[in-house]
Each structure stands twice: as C-alpha cells, then as structure tokens.
Image (cartoon, rainbow, N blue to C red):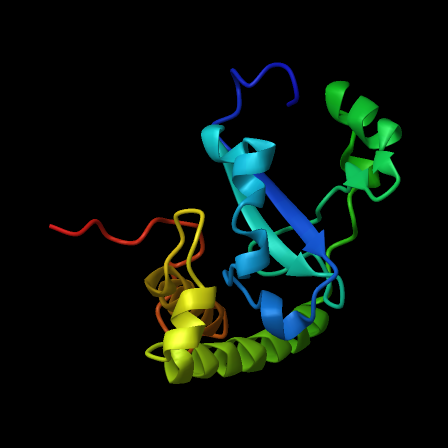
Length: 174
C-alpha cells in the first residue's frame, strides 16, 4: 500500500481528531483542518479522507474495521509491516454489532442534523462567513458538506434511498 499503488484505486484514511464530536459530524470539515490535506499532500494522491472525533468510534457505516497505522506516538511499525506483508487482518478493529452500529448512527444522525441546522442558521451571518473561508474552502462548501453528511447518514437508516456513501465533489457550476 505504501510503495506499490499499482493494485489500489483508492486508499481511505480516517483522521481521528481531538475536537468535540459536534464539530466533526460526518463530512463536516472544520475550518481549523482545511489545510491539513494539502500539508500532508494527500489531496494530490488517490486518497479519500474522513475526519472522526476521538469521542466516537472510528468505524461507521462506511469505515469498516479500520487499522491504526499512526498515532501521537508516531507510525505503528507492527501495523505497517503487517500491511506490507498483506497480513494485517488480525490487527484491524473488530466490526461493531448491528445494534452498536444502529446506536452510533442514531447519535451521529442527531449530531449531523444539529450541525446542519447551525450551518443553515449562520450561513448568511457576515462573521461566520468570514471565519469559514480560506484554503480554497468557502461557506458554501461547509453547507454542502453538512447537507451531504446528514443525507448520507439518513440513507443508512433506510429513511432515504442509499447512494451517498462516498466523498464526492459538489457539482460543477456551469
């Protein structure tokens, strides 16, 4: 995975961040983190990244049995060696039960709706718009991410047609 990407179309990365869960709802992109993908140069690679709050499980309806390869202590050599030898399966986190996943989706759906309502309420406020722009990210991106995250979680509950389960770019303007 790290040196030979010939057999991989895309790598998914979840960054676990020590921010309040309300600030890191599904697909939300806190202004304090918008420059990180560029700094790490993952925006130039076939990488999909997700922000996850440390208060919630890393795994969700899209992130299945993650493997920690980096922490505050640095790289996890055991995990990286296991990946290189294609024997990392035993190191991946266990899958949540169906009940655990339903409960977590319920928690995240409520937080996501609250986040969407907050973004909607603040969208036209001058100060909010000013603090939510920079590094190529605009207030519209925050609104779109809030809508997309909420609808994606809603789809997992069966209340909406599924299909919004991958990071995609907003439609281009014509």
